[in-house]
Amino acid sequence: MVVFMVRLSAQEIAVKTNGLYWLTTTLNAGVEFATSNKVTIELNAAYNPWTFKDDKKMRFWLVQPELKYWLCEKFEGHFVGLHLHSAQFFGGFKDKRYDGYLAGGGISYGYNWILSPHWNLEAAIGLGYARLWFKESDRIYCEKCYENKTKNYVGPTQAAISLVYMF
Picture 1 (tube, rainbow, N blue to C red):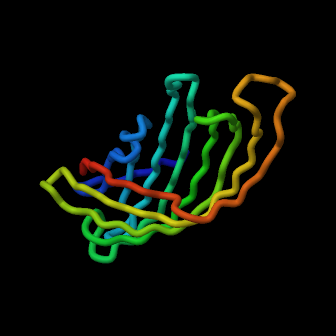
Picture 2: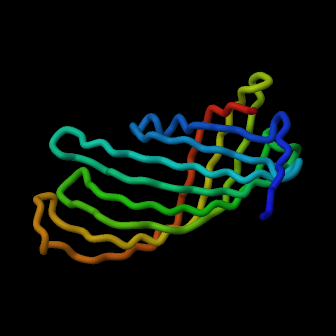
């Protein structure tokens, strides 16, 4: 039997939520762990289950882990990061429905402001790649009326203004 002992002290763990996702009615949360004085590992998850007026929807779940290197000290100031992303989606807002997946990764830059001993504000932007594979069909349901498609996307892959609580 192997026992792992982890010593956690102040400023080693943070929980956060992205305000930009909330503006799109997307539920989201993240947790970030310090592995050293300059490196943290973050795991973000987002979920949008809603259907809007006229059967418009973009239901999805998303997972986005990230490795961050802090230029000053963990959870303070500038950072650069490497992130991965994976998602499953279903919906559409116009005349088409999309049912599929995406996977990819990218780089990010951000800044973390200390507001108080336990609260921070973090802004981040990321650029990267995503491979999408999906079924495209008309919005009117038809089991056999779809076309399999793929798409390669290069561009923004992350945008966040997050409220962070430090333990």
